[in-house]
Structures are given as structure tokens and as C-alpha cells.
Length: 183
Image 1 (spheres, one colour):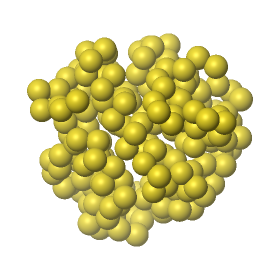
Image 2 (image 1 turned 120 degrees about the vertical axis):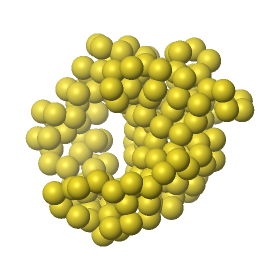
Image 3 (image 1 turned 90 degrees about the vertical axis):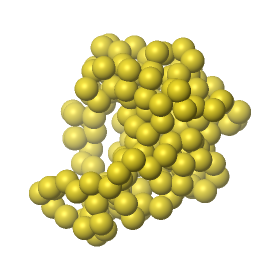
């Protein structure tokens, strides 16, 4: 396994085709996908035919920016993933995201991984600004963003084809510029 990033308790690495079952299981938990799809699971075919190829394409295009499988450093258990990628192809601004299995919630993994990615982005990858988005009602994710050093920017409303509970309150954007970062 080639580690992209190692922290005290995490290893972040590139996804492989062998991660299919773990990704399907992650997105089958209605609590994990509550603020994304209203709890509907992601079909296996979508993970296999769309998501994994998207991740692999980002590795080819950006090398060190993309989606990263998160594992426990001690034991190698799959915890979920982190996203650290340029949404518009401009490496100066990257989007931070994370999706973890329920047993990993509340243990500081999301904050630990987010902080490590931000540090690497600002010190080694030429990133100038990190942005993150979540539903306004997703207090857990908002706390992670704040603990990672990001600040609230705005609330906005998207026109989604299917509303999910809480979407009427909108989405929030958080951000951190390299000039405001405190290692």
C-alpha cells in the first residue's frame, strides 16, 4: 500500500478496484448518506462504473489531489474517505470533503484527516484556498470544518431535483486561505 498521507492514527491512500465492497457498504448506511441523498444508498453499479473511475481519473489528472481511502494506521480497518481536489481544475483552490463509517464518528478522525490534508496542501501542493460545503443542518460536519480551521463564508440554496429533510435551510460554505492558516 502506498500511503499518500499518514497521521498519528490514519493512513490516506489511493483507492483501488479492491475497495469496491467497502465503498458500497459505506454508502449503504442511511445515516452516512443522510445529508447527501436523504439516506438512499448508492447503487453498487454507480460506485463501480462512475465513482471509482472518477477517482482514478483524478489521480491521472492531478496526481496528488483527489479522493483518498482512509484507514486506521493501527490495523488497517477501512474508515471511509477524504476528498481534497480542485473542483474546477485550478489547483489553487481545492474542496475538502469526508465521509466516514459510523463507528468512526465522534473520534476525531475527520478533524485529524482534514487538518493533515490542509497542512500538506498549503505547505507542499501549492494550494491557496480550501473550501468545504455541507447542509446547514449538518452540525457534525460544520464542527469538523471549524476545528480544521475553516470559517463560515455563506449560506446558499441550490435547486435540487429531490429535496431531502433539512435542505430547506440551505447549504453552507466554509473556507480557509493560506494567508489565514495557523499550523
